[in-house]
Image (cartoon, rainbow, N blue to C red; front, side):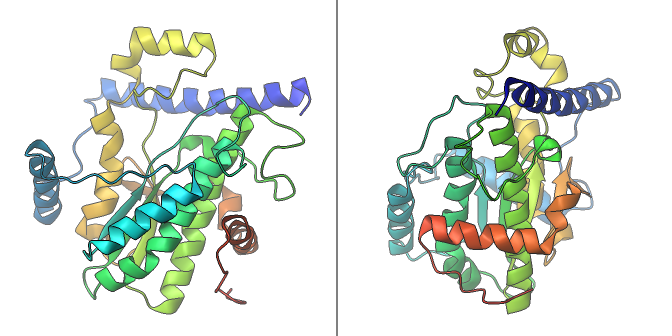
Length: 297
């Protein structure tokens, strides 16, 4: 990628981030962010309470999974299935941001390999468990975390790895576009099969985490000085994912892009059914799994 093209990609990403930060600042001035569970949503409120209690009481069991390694993902799924327990919610939330050009253990460009392909493979390998766990009126749910940077992203099917023209900003945005396309394709296939599983996208906003170490120094300085005002806290950033995972309002509802606990439009190209199909097929090839969708629309 030429220096000019790389600069344009960076400017688009920073512009998208700045727009979100301004929106968050305005909301903070108007009273801030409220937890997703409301007075008329007692089931969601109870689910959130139980999650918090189990975490605080250390009743949560952890299994290791390196999403940058196909071998690790397969081993994790094998270990999980050996427990023979249901799976009602899968939240795809891991990722890297604007890292220098480097590859995963399987040779994939890191943004595309970890942010997208790792979650693609993990979800695919757990689909049978999700389908078995869902039931009428109580669907299992897949929640995939993207970001506002997908609005300025592009998907280059001829060079998904950025091997001929790499930009860390462009690669990151592309991985977030891919996650939205994947979610919509997954929901389409699940609905066509009559599965009691739904798939939605959650956009957390700009959150105060450790993901910013590879960004422009000015952005890091801004975060250091004003994170308490401009950025969401980790709890606030998680609320849309929690909402997507437990709210009764989304029972049986999939294919939504959720931001601040509300459905909104994603980038126009993410609704392209043919692009969704092509990315799905290419992803199956890359991860070595069969594409059993046939000629599904």
